[in-house]
Structure formats: structure tokens, C-alpha cells
Image (cartoon, rainbow, N blue to C red; front, side, top):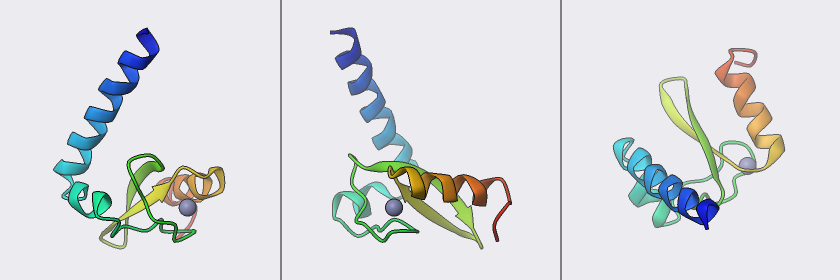
Length: 78
Ligand SMILES: [Zn+2]
């Protein structure tokens, strides 16, 4: 019960977060791809965003993609 509740709050926060980035519509319309594996990003597989060369890159929830995104975030990759 509690877990379900927090999940719902999380999802609503995620939508607000994506809306603030101007990404929510594009994600809901299937227009955004993972920067690494090129899978379509949905609200279900969204992991994180990070800036790269002045653009916002979106990362899916695959472990591999998330690891690479973290390396970009930390400046370990360019
Ligand atoms: Zn991916």
C-alpha cells in the first residue's frame, strides 16, 4: 500500500520534471530515444537526463546505458 503510494508520487514528480524540461510531450509521443541504445523512451523506462554538448540527452533504464550516462555526468567521457 505505502509502496504503491510513493510510486504514484514518484511518477507525478517525474512528469512534472520532464514537463519543466520540455520533454514530457515528446516522450509521451515516442519521439525521444535513449542516447546510447536508441530505444524509445517512455515514462516506464526513463532513467535520467544529462547535458552533453549543450543538449539534453535522455537515458533509458538499462544498466549499461545508465553507467555510460553517469560517466558523461562525471566528465569521465567526452
Ligand atoms: Zn538505453
